[in-house]
Length: 326
Ligand code: NDP
Ligand code: GDR
Image (cartoon, rainbow, N blue to C red; front, side):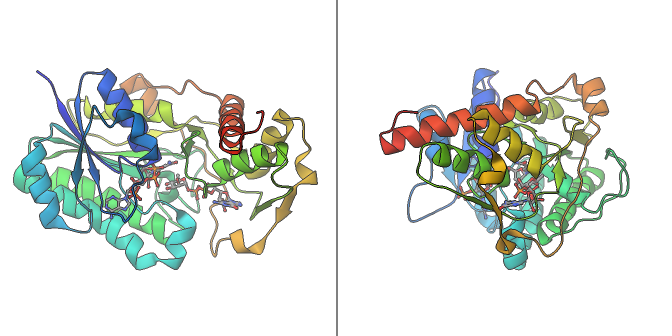
């Protein structure tokens, strides 16, 4: 029988990769989209004939109830969020409404309409924040360092709570940073790959960044959506850390991205206080042992391949947009 999946956040980076994956597995895919004055379907343009787009917003529980009655999904992937850490310092209440309470609204709608569906919550390594152990596992205590991280901790625990209180098949995937050519331009990896391409093509000379020391466990988004799906195929819902088990600094990402196009990063990178955060997360490195043992999941794309993939994609894209030779 064909399964139906509902993806919130389908217009985002992960939503587009997950929709592609589920379609190759024969799912009927519905994606929740919120109203905007201009269309922002760039990442899912190529899928639009094959997926159903339904209107809704994590801020409106009534709309979520109607939406679930209409779609009747077997699996719900809650990827929607205000996901940019820096913005969460400037818009902490909106971030809480969407990224924290939004999870309760959707879980509650599922409890009312579709208690037998399976639910995935997009939790984050930002919950570990000021880390209390290295590497971080499913058992590591949380110490978030931003309103975004705090909101994700709420989303994580409300998912656990609905699982325990109402016996829902609700899973929280604690995913470490994952990137791709579809990453939003304000996140540091894509900001670097995109600006490196513009510098290489003569459209720009400098790259302004904040702190270069933070270290992240960076993987490829295409690999990570496979883990989301695998988690919902488990008979018993549980939480999993998804990571590569390697960490690299922002500085290392710069070095590799510039050297890939034959440039020296120190000639172009300028530090700029406006990109510094009131509280920083210095070091993240995940231990994906449980995911490997229980889900059979492991990342396929290493750090250097990820950096090259992103720079090459931006070189091609920027050249095409400007009518230049890539
Ligand atoms: P993006 O920022 O690329 O996408 C976020 C999505 O959420 C967009 O589709 C956006 O819609 C939607 N959205 C925002 N607010 C609302 C709202 N009020 N109602 C409905 N939809 C809304 O995020 P990613 O794809 O990178 O991440 C997916 C999820 O995983 C997020 O929850 C993120 O916090 C989490 N996460 C991401 C990690 C990463 O490294 N990428 C790591 C760990 C967790 P619109 O296009 O209209 O703005
Ligand atoms: P992060 O991603 O905060 O880890 O959250 P981001 O790419 O924004 O920052 C990574 C690190 O780079 C430092 N940095 C800069 N960051 C940005 N965006 N711009 C800069 O100019 C810059 N200079 C240095 C940051 O301070 C930080 O240390 C991402 C999001 O996808 C979250 O939604 C997700 O939950 C986590 O990853 C895991």
